[in-house]
Amino acid sequence: MGYRKPKPELQAVLKAASHLGETPVWDVERGVLWWIDVYKPTINRFDPRDGGNGEIALDQSVHAIGLRRNGCIVASLEHGFGFVDATSGQIEIICNPLGDAAVKFNDGKCDRHGRFWSGSMANDWVSPIGSLYRLDPDRSARTLDTGFKLSNGMGWSPDDRRMYFTDFGRSTVFVYDYDAASGAIGGRQPLVVIPEAEGRPDGMAVDEEGCLWVVLWDGWAIARFDPAGRLIGKVSLPVQRPTSCAFGGSNLSTLYVTSATMQLSAKDLSLQPLAGSLFAIESGTRGLPEGRFGT
Image (cartoon, rainbow, N blue to C red; front, side):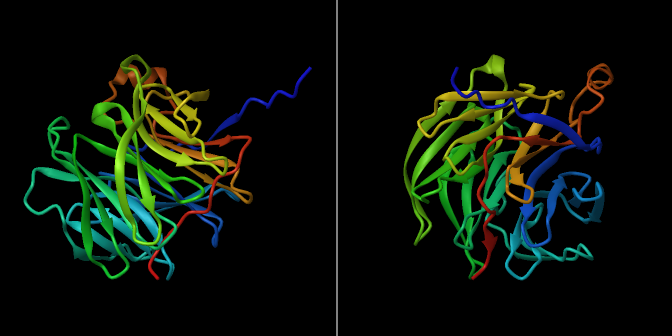
C-alpha cells in the first residue's frame, strides 16, 4: 500500500463568537496570531501557548492588517491606510486612495518585499467598482487594478512570480504575473471559479508547495488547490461562514482559520455554536513566513 497523508486535525482554539473575524497574521517574532473583528472593531492578539486573547479597541472599522518591521501594525481602515499602535490602538492615517467612491476596503496582506496590499468592495456588494491597491514603504498608494465587486483574499507563490487575488463577488480567484522587484502585476487570468453550491472564495493562504488554501464562505469548508487551480483537498468546518486563514505555529504547519456570525439567524447560530470562533488545523504541510511592511 502507498503512503496516505493523515487527515488534517481540527480544533476550536478560541470560542470568540466574533461578528466578522478576519485577516489572521502569524507573528514569528512573538509567537502569536494577530486577527481582527472588523466592525466591533478590534485588533486581537491570540497566544496559543496559554489560549489567551487580548483585544485592542479601535475608533473606526478595520478591514485588514499586516505587521510592520518596527513591531507595530499597518492596516486598511474606515478612513484610509494607516498605522496602529499595538498597545494603545492609536491610529495614524497616512493616505486614503478610496476618495469619495461608494466603496470600502476589504481584506489585505503584506508581500515579502515590504509592501501592503488591500482591495476594496462596493458598498452595495455587487457593483463592479472595487479596486486593488498597493501601499509602498514610502507611504504612497497606487491603484493596480479595477473592476471588482468584492475584493478578498490574496497571496504570492513561493518563487514570487505569481500573485493571487480573489473577487468574492465573481466567486473567482485570479492569478497575475508578479514582478517582485517593482511590485508590478499584469496578465490577469482566472485560476479558480467556485460553484455557487460550494460557497464563495474568501481569504486564502499559500503553502510552501505553492498550493492555495481558499476559505469558502457559506461553504462550511476550506479547499486546497494546486498551482494549476485543480482541487486537491478539502477540510470540512463546523461553521457556515469561515472567513480567512494563515499558517502559524513553531514550524508554520498550523493553519489558523477565522470565522463570522455576521447575518446568521438565531436558528443558524443554534445549529453552529462555534460560529465566530478561531480554529487551528494541523495541515500536514508548511506555510511561508508573513511579509512585513517597510524597508
